Length: 319
Image (cartoon, rainbow, N blue to C red; front, top):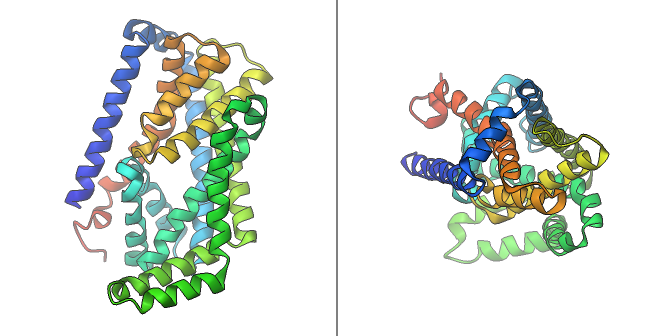
């Protein structure tokens, strides 16, 4: 836990630095003026869009738990674990999210390695979802095709390989015979069994469909942020808002930086300036608002769960 806290603090410090640098690049006074003039009555609606995203992703999380054999976990407990995982996204490389596998082992008895596959499946299905939302934008702006195709290809390859069961079992049998790897062979087998189940076509299609609708919610939130800053409403603004947020989410995920920090912010601000012609100060204000309404809102909710869930931090045993 000390190591996890250090990683989390590192992510939080990086987040503060990113906010400060963005404000400086956009001119603190001008950015402050934009934030002051923002239509703040839209803020609850924007947060509701984020909660819509979280709700649908929670349903996906609970669906995945059932797929790996966790059928009797109460919805409330499942939601507690799901929300408690939000702060783990800001650990370097998001490595802290593996802790969710440990939590599932403690509360449901699921093998830790198999629980970690749920985290992996969440990330990959989210990746497909935001890529789906980015499709029209990529068609309109071909220069984004290389990154789009590379990420999509890697995701498809990973899912495809997980379903070639004879090959995977042969590799696992080979690992089981290696003296240096025998001690982790069982965990690797559990991990593979989880990925095989979660990446089956029907489960993947359902998860990606749910994820696409969930991330569309945050795209609507991005649109409302732009409207609140005085950008004219309309179909073009709406479609660009969804494209910018979706593609920036991909960039942030690929970067493996804590919470996509730096990469996501730079991508959002850069694309708003490049595609919509927004002044730097306006683009920075929009970036700060949407990141506070999505990433930092989620981190705050998660830390709130931590405050009343000492067992998840291994500070006390559960009854």
